[in-house]
Length: 443
Image (cartoon, rainbow, N blue to C red; front, side, top):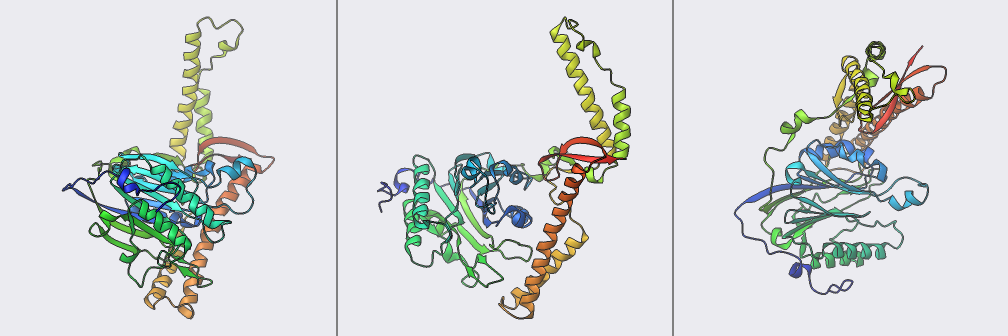
């Protein structure tokens, strides 16, 4: 089929014939629309624990906030792009954030990963001889949806021309039900034909194919999909299933693919146990003894010799020695601050996200999961007492998460802006990974 000047299937020109290797590697690959990182973060951590590769859509992060994704999963490398590059670079963002895609790859596989393309609606990686393509295709609310879909498909085909690969794992939120024939589905099927792919929709249990659900309205559909190379479809796909959970706060359910791929290179020994000693930590200033820190820094800093002679005109005869003195003075200051912080401030690992978590949230989460499981056991009814209980418990858990996180942030902001106070400014790492300046008040 002719698509933007591509007449022959790419499988005939750009794909290496798979060698018949005895070695097989079982991979678990997931796709998950977060509906915003704040809503999907908790279940994304759960998904990383059970997956080797995770495709993510709609993280809603601006380009300068993508680092928030890099702190998720100690054992993963993240490749991400924002959908708001153009909007933010040309003016202010109006309305809620939108879009964005990312791929998380386990470090044991990352040794063979090559970044190919990161666009607003898709990311392409080459993992050894396997091409990974994660997409977030236009939704029904997108202006000129059909034209944008065709343009996105054409861009993907153009980006993979000339690449040498044996297999393709294509997945993500496609906003199209591939079981329903229409013009949009035809565009996707033509892409699958050009890349020699087959969708794995038929391998999902018929009674459990819903990946998108709006509890308040009852709307639901199957719009998250995987497609794999035809040579993998029949014998290598072990399992495809939708994961539904009461702790999932997104309106999408993750889709998980278990597949055997020949000759995948994994770096042995790279995992949580091996990198544990290298784990970065961040200081919990909100839990520390600031008065003790203030006293220790005063004592230690007073003991440092200040090279005041360097401030005198004409006193710097040897520039090299002067640089060494300045560096030594600086290092002594840093060492004193570190020594005081070690003694006074508790530390957590660098990606410790839920610094505001407490027992109340644990109980609300447990209740939400119990209500959800009861609802599932009854066949997921759309009305009745169990349905209302599930919906209310999930909403209560979701609201509590937002409230407690925002409350901590407001405390920091209030402290920073309060007048008539003596402030000690401490440059540190925020518990979520972003740099910030915290202040404590001394009357």
